[in-house]
Image (cartoon, rainbow, N blue to C red):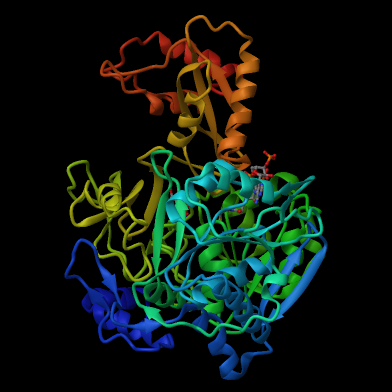
Length: 630
Ligand code: COA
Ligand code: AMP
């Protein structure tokens, strides 16, 4: 069948389409129907089913005789370690850790925070939670104690699973002090903290709540898989919104299993047994869906890679991993390829490796710029597939479904909507726009299985963030166009979210941090274009009256504050002191205009600006940082 036929079959009978897809999952109680729309615009998928995620990702493959197949290949150029874990070993490790969690009183519905570097135990931790119906929330290691504390207070975890440290090029980050500081700052206290000691920096287990990863599993009875209801949350993943409070995206168990399984063959074109590699981090949605769950649910081998595209040790690392482990489909963020291209523009490292097993490269997480796509295409000689999705959806909204049919690639477009997604471009009043007209990208409700049903403990915020602007639609927060062939183009965000090295960050959250500096009276943070990371945050600081300390000192303090409060992942290194912020007469800060000036783009003087002269000062300030070139 062609893509068009499959999309139309979904349109004609979504219920049959998703019941059919559900047959790939091993249910404890099969769903008697797919969609429950009784509570629209809140929808439920497979609510009367009973199922276990870990059973589908691990145990069923062992039972089917694939116990010896590699489930996880660990490749860590940063520590010079490699390991392979079979499905049978993964089942045993998972059952043991789940048993230890159960022995510590963690049961179905309890939350567990996971704060770990890229080691296979991070996957074991996620699976151990879903094995007993506990709801995990993975926090990216690049977030600092405050961000961890915010998540602890929202998720109220009974336990935290962590590595003693994270390893970045040139430095080791002790995680345990960050965890202790976060628990100190938060109102909620977890009862148990389990630490996997890494030899690069072990942690002192100083509190009565602290346990060693191995010791806590000694002698415990391995836990069996606990069936849960279809809508039981498999996990919560926090992502940036407009304000400082992150949104806890809830992932429902049954739809997650069905959606991810469907995606592996149809989108990534791999068969069970093939090696699939997503070079991301378990802290991001790409890591959840395509390092951990989807490849395992589908019976693939997944790679846990601990390193960077460059510098660990060189710009040939990706090619080495692909050739050594015979990777068939590879997924990463465009920024990783920009980093390689910058270091090795002619792609000379590639010549050392045999990449004949690679059939396609998939890019997502940020805009894939045409230069990078063309460079990758020429170098690798395989299709480079841009696809668009979000933490909220958990899998592709628009892509090029190679497993169904290789559609013509239009560089600059993540191609077409996947079955389950009816994507429209709307104007401000919610009217559908004609072809090639820019507007807000919205998806007609219901969203397909696996997408967020709500935000953790925040139904009202879910409705106001996503369902209110355009009744009957999910508001993606992205703006773009759809062309005459149904190809989508993602042009910009419509909110204060920026995308730095494929990481989604909130400028609002950064402004909250800067505003806490004692000398800062007012501030604004914008995202400016960056050749490597796509965007970088840049802060404007207006100082309180009477402050006459050197500006460089204040800027340095602000940079440090951002690192301490949000974390190094914010990549906040640019800030400048100005006298006033440009505003409309009603007091709205003209961030979009400042972005245009910074990026040296033409802009129209906003009619409502209260003082046009101020823009010259902004331009000068930006020029002092190397932006706003004439
Ligand atoms: N724990 C602690 N610190 C971390 C971290 C972690 N897990 N991950 C990143 N950091 C730190 C980095 O060391 C860096 O610190 P620095 O300011 O002291 O240099 C900071 O956070 C910013 O990280 P990043 O923006 O990733 O920059 P980088 O210079 O370390 O690496 C790339 C740049 C392009 C190589 C890297 O971002 C990359 O590989 N990105 C693409 C893949 C990807 O993970 N995409 C995510 C979603 S698919
Ligand atoms: P995240 O939830 O962190 O995955 O970020 C999702 C956001 O990243 C989207 O809403 C887009 O703004 C951006 N994004 C993801 N994939 C793409 C893509 N292929 N092209 C353009 N932007 C993308």
